[in-house]
Image (spheres, rainbow, N blue to C red):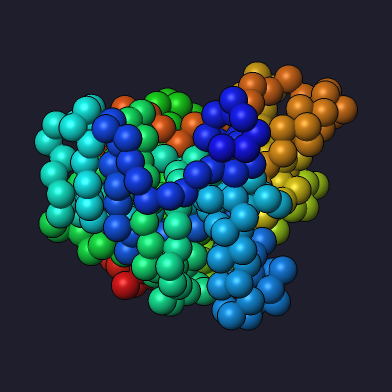
Length: 332
């Protein structure tokens, strides 16, 4: 590990040799789900050339022993088959041959890639032949029988977002979701609608017209606004108008692009809450931007873990067939 004494996530490099200690899992990896902000950055740098994206991924993993994008600082997660379970691994139920998804970031998961088989440029899913190690502290989930594998992978990559949304939204809240057309955005919309759909207000903001149409078809919002979330004043004016000047009690940022911090803050009322789930968010821009605008808002960093988050995310698809169909269409 480099530097010596570092913990796995902030470390520059991990030892990715496919050998495990007695409290770890060795996984034969089938597919990586590169997180949205990271994959968007890789595509833009490669000018949307799949071959160059492949070269970038192989280079990062070779140099760092993990899929840890040095530009965005983010990773993703994976699915694969348990090849070996150490005798002291905390979960005694896990057995060789089980299909699992890791619920920890690729930025702290030792990974060795032998071959990239296919890159799905529209979803960020990367089929590979390789091995990974899951530490004793790393949560994981068994893949459900009733949800297609690629859909499950997409959902598990962002399952922290709907779990935190369910915790944060109150029945009377005005909720704004930026980047509502992505997987974390749609799952967050569903939980916001469950909590505030009857007596509150749920507003979706999305840049893509296609995504806006898809959001409307879900029936989980009071209003869909097509806007570029990197335009703070346009976002402020649209939310101000939609809420009759009250602004949002809670703004959820799921945008996979940089420079959306001020839009999130301006959309939120004083003493309201901004939940930054996006990996493209920068702390300094958010903190100093709020200070510079004299905005008294609480800001919460999107923790990707919450107890029961995988179960809640899967249950969202089971409860809302339109949501399930949207994911199935996108990730099949």
